[in-house]
Length: 285
Image (cartoon, rainbow, N blue to C red):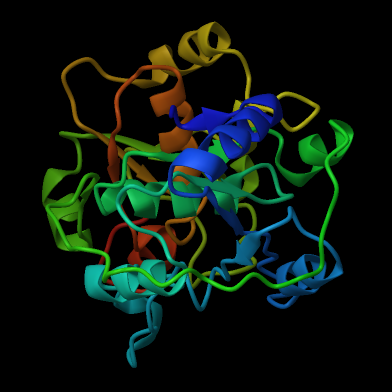
């Protein structure tokens, strides 16, 4: 499985694996930062048959620090043990093919994809075009909540994806290629609806995650993504990705993986963590 899967490939995968191998696990990751119950309501109204709901706050994030976003940001990563326990509850094993989707351009599904890759899980992909593409291809929706098949505890292995902490990034500023996935207005500091201060981490370049998509919500072709991304990537420098809280940065990581341009490094705390510490530098414009 590549990082993206089309509806047609997804349907073929489900048909192939059900009789002979582990059934495909499907994760509905729909979410809204300004209405945190909207994704779950939409899931209840209808989802891809067999899909579990993966809530950004409860499932794809760990507990928030008592000190607030200054430790880990608005959506801190769970511990690897916590994430392994959640995968086990969904009946996911290292051999289980997993497909994640949402109806927001793939940004929340990309977080699930990255977290599974972080666990070393290879057979995981994001449904290209999400729920809209599923419906456009004639797919039906279901309202039943699936029951997970019992499975052994998901093993904790060496991380399959790399991360960087705020202190590490501060020490490396100027020596890494840093990409900010937020919309341009937030990157430039013209507005800040969610976090402590406006602006961006010094040295970061801006690549709004939605620029990875075509108007129909599917990812752009590989060659187009390569042409758009290569001018942003500094030869030889590690590429660190961040956004507001470590979510949409995963969309850029997914786009680079799809384009064959490497996996990159995630700064999980992102701007929400960075901006919460007044001692960290901020750039505007």
